[in-house]
Picture 1 (cartoon, rainbow, N blue to C red):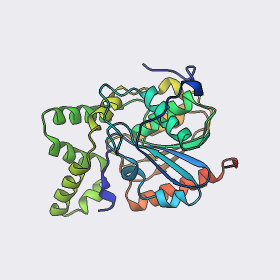
Picture 2: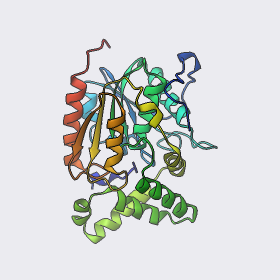
Picture 3: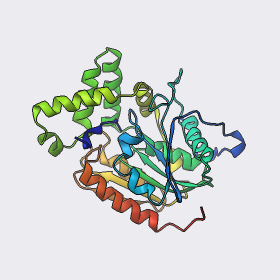
Picture 4: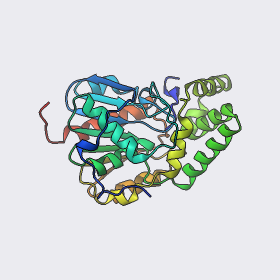
Length: 285
């Protein structure tokens, strides 16, 4: 969810689909990389495309076209003046994909991006070939809701360094934290603080309001749900709820993995995702 580059160290239901004519051009900052069947990337709150997917972008781009829009207030995307709307955000990501010449795609969603991916599949089922949902949630669980409240309260008081400390505490595993020396931990906090995007509070405000539970049972796209079992920001049970609610969804656990996947866990994630994508029907590109 949060853009921690530490690995280097009630809304519309499914029945409310929209038509292409109602899509408006997106002004989001979009990464486009690679060639082949399209993968639309949906990042987490307070994150970005590099922060969530940086370890696997080059590998996936070898045989896929990656389309990675940054949410408002992340990357080079402008900050919005009002609250983010999940339907609008989903439509903006689809508009970014179509503007990149991609008529259909698999959607890879991480954390908040999993809810965005679900809403994309609900509103644009004809475009979505598959879903990969990692560390996701249909609605904020008690731990995530509390964290979102703390982030908003701390930031509102100007305590951004404490927000960064909370991020490090929540998004890394106990093993990862144990292996960091005190000076390294302080450096990680400083790095996290420097990487927080201007739209972070808008993202977490949306986290606190998301509810895609009514969408789940009507989804038809093949779905892979990946649950990091050591996640201390989004409970693994939230991933289990996604898998249980989506017909035919496949659930994979990453034992002990944290919310932000380290290099080893991301490599395991990549193997599972490649196996899943490789089993999909071929498409002409």
